[in-house]
Length: 327
Image (cartoon, rainbow, N blue to C red; front, side, top):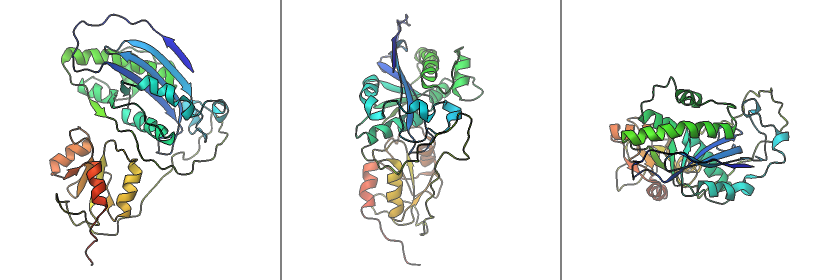
């Protein structure tokens, strides 16, 4: 693990009072992109309210499984063998996140990986809000060719030294976030903050065997595929407030949930509901804890007039799902 302190520089005198008081710029490298993948390295740059660096921290993490795409992150089983387990660094990681807004590039991915690791360790990450730098770049209408980190870095003249190394990616993001934050403050832009809900219920599946991947080897697939059988019941239409769910209804989910998303989806499918990955005019119900967010599913639900309930209400509805009408 590595820690360093950097002196802060002067900042603009005027600052929006509604802006957060501190940020934790985070990057995690992982064994893959699926729910059962693990964190193998993590870095945090702590910033003050105006985006100035306070300190930074980095650690390797032993994932207790195959390290995945070594050709991307460069971390082999041999390198990770002596690294601490996540539960061994969970408290130090938490201390650096506590009371701050988590900032990441494609923040929903980093947050979900972190939340799952804490759930495995039977703890909660002390994060209540996140900010995605992709969303902030869109709010600022930055003239980027795409929304890759390298493009954001190039726009602000930040030199990237080791792409896909958690510490350098976090440094690059921190340096690019500072001018983004100042531009937002100067323009009176509302920061695209989203609520983070720690996982309170989680279920692991058996992990892949630990392998000895060479740096240049590329397995044909390193993300497990999971496909549910088709719903056997016809769609009876939209959910009506105050009534029961009916088997065959199309249910979509958006945003963070306290119960791990796949568990919720499994329960919906087991009850005879159709789990949809997108919103259409045929969607019966959208489940979200953040109905005021600007996610594509929430926006489409508004456009189509799709009913919306939160996770708690959906849990109650799942207890008494009306059987499908006989054919």
